Image (cartoon, rainbow over all chains, first blue to last red; front, top):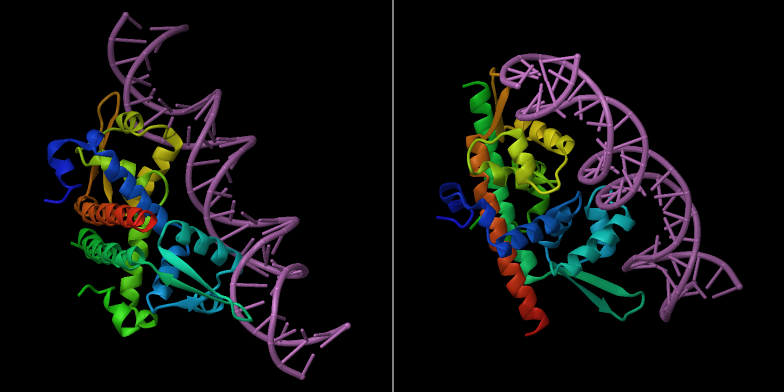
Length: 125
Length: 125
DNA sequence: ATTAGTACTATACTTTTGTATACTAAGAAT
DNA sequence: ATTCTTAGTATACAAAAGTATAGTACTAAT
């Protein structure tokens, strides 16, 4: 039985260990907002540059891209590599943690699809 | 191999099926914001009333609680049951979909904890 | 008539998130 | 000297999310 589910049976939500709560809010912070997941998805290809990200992600402004990249780097999801060429070359890549987050995304997709079929069943049973 | 992960290997992010994207954004919408997960966690106990939710969830205002409950109901995560007693009794409970979302929460906790240990490793290797 | 309990809603405000547009720094090529 | 490229930053603004505080509608008991 999973860690969180046992809370259902044992009525322990209040005592949910702090490190679980921290882990959960970490994950929420990594994904939240309009741009984090599109950026992570773009990085699944491999290393990529600022301008290519901007072209890849529809309608993101350089300001938002810059801000989100900084947060993702701070959170240890991506790494920023600077090459002292000219013009300067900067590449972004996913860390191992960043790659692993696909497992969360997968479970979100699974739930989302299940939820849609459930919603359809309950509206037109 | 999971649905999303195969994108890493086959360079297919651009062609990611629309229903996966819809499922993912559904899930994000269900969880996003400051209050949705605390509310879902409180409901894991079973049925609960407005005032008890308010006491359970630290610093939520009735306005936010009311707004979030409405959204969760619209999204088919919770059900609102009205009993015509006096004073009126209203109970909120998780739907089956609402209960299932614990699988997503579990995978978020798993990733979050892994991510913390990875982050520690990379800072003090 | 007043007080109290339940489940909210209204109004005004602050903070966070996102947009639009223009601009900068550094070196290389012309 | 001017222009080009990459990788952003600055400024001003709009919209969304969240907060604070007060008030409403209903009924029941005192």
